[in-house]
Image 1: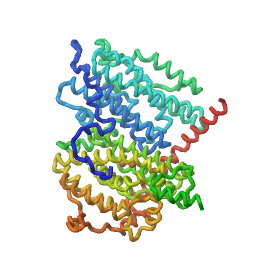
Image 2: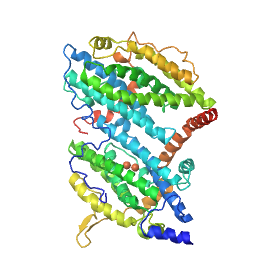
Image 3: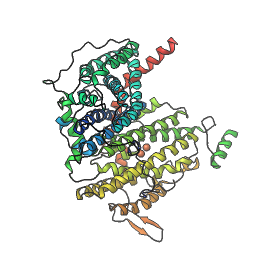
Image 4: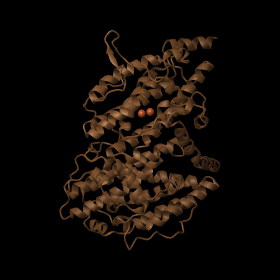
Amino acid sequence: MDNAYDGLTEDSEEKHWAFGTGFSTALAGVDRAVPSGVDHDVLAVYCLMLGDDALIYSQRLAEWCSRAPELEEDVALANIALDLLGQARLLLTRAAEVEGADRDEDALAYLRDEHEFRNVRLAEIDCGPGPGGDFATTIARLLVMSTHRLALLQRLTGSLDPVLAAIAAKGVKEVAYHRDHAAQWVLRLAGGTEYSRERMVAGLERVWPFTDELFATHAVEAAVAEAGVGVDPATLRAEFDEVLDTVLRAADLDRPDVRQVAALAGRAGRDGVHTEALGFLLAEMQYVARSMPGAVW
Amino acid sequence: MDLEREFERVVAADHRIEPRDWMPDGYRKTLIRQIAQHAHSEIIGMQPEGNWISRAPSLRRKAILLAKVQDEAGHGLYLYAATETLGADRAELTEKLVEGRQKYSSIFNYPTLTFADVGVIGWLVDGAAICNQVPLCRTSYGPYARAMIRVCKEESFHQRQGYELLLTMMSGTQQQRDMVQEAVDRWWWPSLMMFGPPDAESSNTEQSMLWRIKRHTNDELRQRYVDMSVPQADKLGVTFPDPELAWNADRGHYDFGEPDWTEFWQVVKGEGPCNAQRVEHRRKAHEDGAWVREAATAYAAKREKAA
Ligand SMILES: [Fe+2]
Ligand SMILES: [Fe+2]
């Protein structure tokens, strides 16, 4: 330790020093062959859907870094963003592998345009710290997203695709914590001060219009569910409602009474039809990677 | 008098002073100031690199960077906790920071202009921080020394990650190599200034050395940093922007030029490129979060009453 530079360039055993970033070992030993009878293109798009949810939502959550109300919360939100980024990397890598078009996680994250992203719109909208929300809105979205994702990942642990099953098993532990974190904050904000309660109510109203979309079954989701590798989101609604009702009841809050944001001619996030927010998010996320073709990072 | 003699004996024997032990007022005040400034530096230090999280050009680099900036928040937390063992209050220290009444490391008042800055900060800035901090793992105040052991371990990860990014970039395109060199040119002199003014102008050194809060002088540490950095720059294939930099066989050290101390004092006094921006960012986060902290406190109080 006395020499700060010891081991700086040794390529010894130290391959794991990037905390939470080396994922080659996360799924070690898992059979990566696509189960027979499963359509590769359909499975690849399904992996993109779940991967894009995680990637785009993680990008939003990371905006809180250095802006949270408390240092402890800064650490917690960064942790959640990192978990989701880790899930996104595994899922995009699986999508690329199954697709077989010589792309990798970075080509998928950085070189696709808006209409090629398959995330639900709730993942991409600004819920704070930008002008589209605040901490309460952020917590409202975390509650909704994590409740949906936990129910989904729990079911996905039984996927016939061993890779998706393994990714889900890892993700369940992470997202269970995310949901718990969100629920605790809903209780605190709803039961704290008069002002925080107002903010919590407003936050739920901001995100609620995007909830129906989470449970609308896309053709790809129907197909993967049929093949036993994926989950039909419509089947998650009852569990979602039950969890939300439990949390809201404990916080003495009502379900928001607001209209849903409709799809555009029947098409929404899963079809690559998004809100105006996604273009700006991607412009920022992708510009360095796109402006230096041939660069290695 | 006995208490004071006992304190001096413990310090001189290189043993640790613990929170319940008697200590001179000056020692306590100096420590609170030093550790608070260190904690503030960790927290303000989240901003320059945090600036690139949303734009990191690969998902792996994004994860590394987010994890690093998160670590810095953790360092701030351990260090504020160490000040609390001395009777300080984190909320008060934060007020002092956002009102500009307490300082943080001037290095964070420089802007990060390209993604190469992320690598150069890891290599040079975390590197200089390690040179400054490794000796503090043996500092006389126990909680501070223990916090520093943990912090130093993580800083050395950061440094390696930064250096590895630069090695990768240097193996890429010419545009990337130019980007790395340009970032090194901007950060080299400010990194030398991280060790503080020359010993002749440094006011607190002598007493702090006696108390074993500090263990080496600014100039000693700066020399050590230069000696370690030059071979690393060679290996990387970059140069430092100092025509006087040369190996001196007689001294067994590198000779190097004088940093621009006028610039140093300018930045310390608040006229650096980002001083106002950094403090304003922290102040805004703190003020925007006030209602959330109030809610958490009110909720906890209600729960306690109900129990
Ligand atoms: Fe740090
Ligand atoms: Fe660091």
